[in-house]
Length: 346
Ligand code: 5GP
Ligand code: MN
Image (cartoon, rainbow, N blue to C red; front, side, top):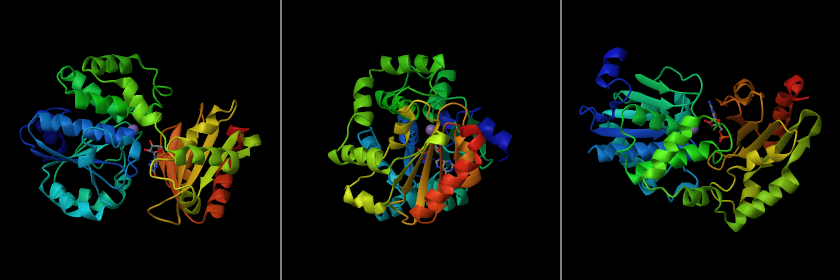
């Protein structure tokens, strides 16, 4: 089917009620965050309510602080050997693949080949800038705060926002809350709060959701935070930039669990005048790979720096990338990248 025909068959932008699709695989990006997991699970609950079979598949593990979410225990994880068979079967029989919260197929990491080789049409729902052309239908809204908001918008357009279940509402709220730091950045558009008022009307406990995600920490996480800020945070004062590092050796020393480092990269931005914060984090699943998280305040383009220097991308104020090298080499490369933006950072 050609794009336009498919789009029509998919009922404009929203294939969900089209009887043609009954086995749906929902796939999100590597290192799935709250928006990726929340949006994917919201879609799963939605499709199941419509009587369809829907499976969420992600490339690798997601943080412990998202495990309470309704449906999270059914998520299939590509790096888990026990899930391999089910993933093969779910993608094998999928007649539709919904791609959630990513803009390039390489963001599927190890899952990319299986998804891109499937004959099922792909339907992208996302909010990252400049989506690549790899799906038959693309719904991309970079102005929106989260993929969760894109889904609220689509449901609202269809007049379905009042019909959703409480589980859909919980997942959509969590998705938007996570991508906006609990509505503390990228969250000034009034319509977000109109959607939230619908979600509250479905009975969600937003205070409990906040505690589950942002105010639940292990002793290890708190001690790690102290250590990273006190010992490992290096300030480049003349560049208004902070760099924090974490190796797998340190991770073992602090008994760090998956998700314990979430949000660390934002902490230096509390310092008045700071413009850029970079967290260099050795990959637990691929030792020797350094994952980079970039955060900025104001106009500094993290996405540009991430794509020019770290093979990554993202949003203007929040991006990520990777380097294949040792930690000391990564620090040098990061400093060189920062120096090349000296004009903007002075
Ligand atoms: P985080 O620092 O939380 O891992 O990622 C921040 C943002 O950057 C997210 O919106 C994520 O989608 C994006 N991002 C992270 N890593 C990559 C990457 O390797 N490539 C691209 N294109 N975007 C990334
Ligand atoms: Mn997102």
